[in-house]
Image (cartoon, rainbow, N blue to C red):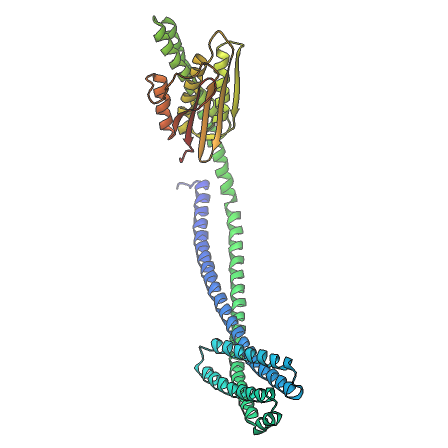
Length: 437
């Protein structure tokens, strides 16, 4: 009987435990989601109930304010009848306006209750009767007919109207008091439901935490084993990548050596120049590869600013001239590798042209190289202080292979080649957007 591999048994047990744990986790997450949704609805329910309690309280306060305003109007009326002071008339007007304002507010707050609306109509009628009697007495007093004002008061119509107002206000308040008690009880009940829901939610969170801790304990050994395997795979991958980089570097050096030998043995100056340019382009691409795998960053990105400085310095040094000065104004920018090749070739062409045409052998010169980030993209510039460009120069109309290559490479980057205005010398700029890859 063949004995099973202990590692396979342990792995199988862990797989079963993970599947069981996953099902439990899925059920717990679903329960938590349901509890969360239910809790949200309960909170909305509780908020609505609390708003109705506050609404009822505002109605009751408004009803009380109506009685208070009418009482204030009566007090001001008596003060005017006794003293004749005009300030009491102002108090009467303020109290009457306040009473009307509060009745209107109560009417708007009870639009959902037809019974209360009927009472408010009756209240407004009685309130108008009381105010009419009040206006009659004040008018008689203003005309100096004190006896007539007293006679109106003795009729008792104002007292009857005010009594009716108080009865209606008591009915309104009693109805709202019952509603307030019912709504307060409902809000309290909902509050208890909220607390129970929170308790259930807390228990579910506790269960999830215990489950997570148990899974961590069960998977710790498996994770350690996987981590060891990953470290081994990473070590092997690093060795393989170093080997590949070494082979690529050797291959580029071999190609460069062949082109260099062909350039030396070429018969014509034009052929040697073309081969030298080809060699320069090969070396530019090789520098991109070397910087990328030596940078220590993730694969697929290279520092364009650092590359521009290094390439410019190397090309200037290759002239072996002390009268050629290099000025760089670059900033680090890690670009996608899909942009590395075109940028390397563009830099090589522009710097080579600047050294060739902007630095005659009979005088000193200065080369400017810049690379900056702009809004949404980058700007690569190369300038010299030579004799400048011929009149009517256009990079799009040039027939040289170098200019055509720069123009095509700029389009490959999604950008364009520009000729910048300078007082002396020539200046080119390539503006291109950030990679979307």
